[in-house]
Image 1 (spheres, helix red, strand yellow):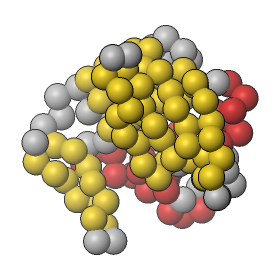
Image 2 (cartoon, helix red, strand yellow):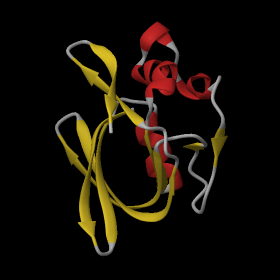
Image 3 (tube, rainbow, N blue to C red):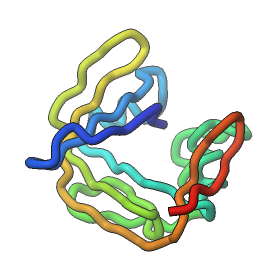
Length: 129
């Protein structure tokens, strides 16, 4: 689970993600040196809830009920994500309870879903494009 993801640079394409070091995601990124970023649409609300910890679902069980694919690095990406970024790990910087994860975007896949899924004021909502 990632708290936030932002663009670091356009050329070369890089992103920054903030990952809680106590999450099950952190050691996987550290070990395999790659990660995926999925921009979700309204149809992915259940996926978002599973990865957010709703219902106590953890680790590999979070991937159930969705179709996953890989591009270049082997990171799992939602096959129908609005946008999916396949990233190799450049650096992890520990600060407080989180690590700032810097990654190089190795591959991108987009899918025109028309809307994005956001979490706002305690609930998931579609955001029109």
